[in-house]
Image (tube, rainbow over all chains, first blue to last red; front, side):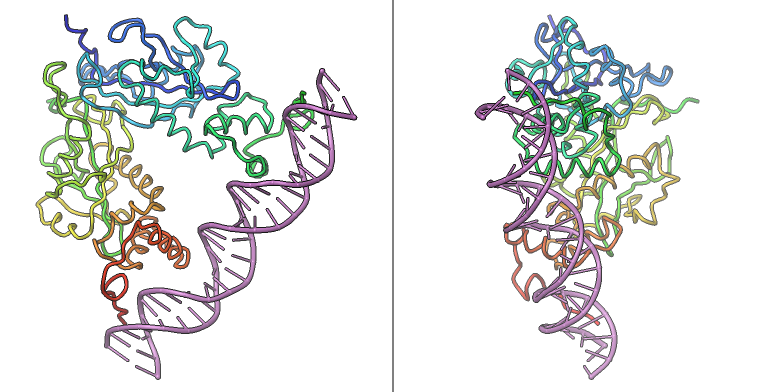
Length: 218
Length: 218
DNA sequence: AGAATAGTGTCTATCAGACATTATTTG
DNA sequence: CAAATAATGTCTGATAGACACTATTCT
């Protein structure tokens, strides 16, 4: 019995990140069909290529958006999806030759809990919960590349903002950076950057006690 | 008459750069067959995907290497090819749905002249010779993305070294940087970086009068 | 009050940009 | 010698890291 033949030679996979509990999380789904049935993997699907000249099929970005929405149940935001690499090793899929274009998405922790309510979908700490050895296909490789890519962008405001609630404290944002980088970041340096972002208008202060109704719990 | 059907839904295109005459050049080839016959385009070809499960087909990187070698006549060096983006607009190829994975390559100016000896192959100044409006398919878009990608890497030693002859002067290297960035770069700052590279062992001084037999012509 | 977290002051080292100055080679 | 290019000196401003210090809020 050969595993089913791949429905399309082109696929899209998504590395969807968030930060909760000061920890970088990635969204994994349990595969409901072979190959690798019941294994965890990043959400992905074949790209509809049309029928070679008649139906146009879907754009790569549309496929990524579709998968983001079906796997999280959330509407996708413009700019949320970012293509980062194609993976084309010929043995990567036992069903046949499938090249996948991998995308990176960031989800606000505001929505993270409701995403995890779905069956067979959950957030995993990239540091110590991802079942690296048991990820389907070559998803361990893809996820590693995605994490690296995210880290390299962590100096960027927009990257961090996407990983934080709609209203947040400076500390929240810094905690997000630390979570992404997997190391503590210097308070002073971070606040300087933060102040610059505010003065550049990239961040607006929310009303209330300074940036947010943050307390200083014991 | 429909244009011929695309042989494969997946292709690879290469943006091959060099620097000659203090100017950033890209290698274009004249298309010998429809669509866009006789138009200039970046070298590229369909990826052999095998036959869905039996023959394995070629890796993405192998396809890129193959195209680099056939279009330049030069053997490819390890690390020379760098994948940077997939392009998947459904209308990008009139033959049907073709997604292309674009790669960036840098060629030493030592070899640039012999590359251009081939028929239907030539170097074009990115700044003022590329026939942007007449490039085949969506190659204008791909080339623009490649150029941007190259510029963002121009601070990196390896990127610059690949664009310069095997032995070179500091000025040569700085000229390469200026060509990539399309703006003059500060002498002092560049030399500081250069000295650091030397002390880090990334660059070895050639024998002879300092770095190279460079004179100071009038 | 004491613990915990939030935020500030300030010193230092590093580096880029600007620009003047000196050195070397060609004509 | 003059012109052109190569290389260096040096000032300034921006920024990151380190670390001590002050401020606020909770228990």
